Length: 237
Image (cartoon, one colour):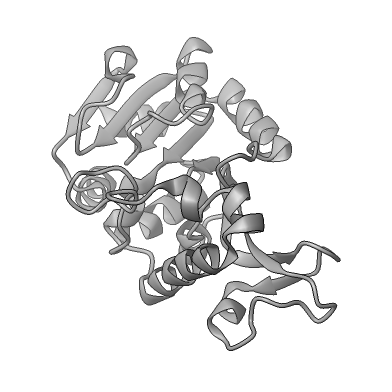
């Protein structure tokens, strides 16, 4: 069924969440066993307050995340999505992830709703640096003397308007929306698959656990690894 929908759709959008990255070895945020927020208050280390008033904790937290991101790499699922883009089966990727693995795997037209952990930005002069700089001694300081922060969306900040608009435009055109590895609990990002469905798209959700939009989906796949499911689907195309 999904293979037929993929072949027939003139505009397919893939929407990915943390479950896509966990198969690369990164922890997710909310799971009881390994979630990043298990036992941690996000406001204490990943918020605008922490950025300005709790900087040592802020830097330690993002150094940990950058080290984890650099230690892992895209998995087969990322590469299949990139290949589907090259073959014209997928037109856009909308992601809640900040690891850049879709781009590393070869995807283009990737819309990052929560920013990118690969880039640092100076609070004073706006100059940008690669994330690896954070791991060097003194690497949190710009050449102008300003403080460098990761270009991710912090708690207390709004999602980037340009990314939201691009995502809305893609979902308005979608004939098929594939949700891969998102709990669909975080707003406003979780509104986009709903938007695609309301605009007439087929909605397919692949996630280890049930989501709040399963009742809207045309097909729901649970308890399957995304990479394995994509590989199986690709072979059947």
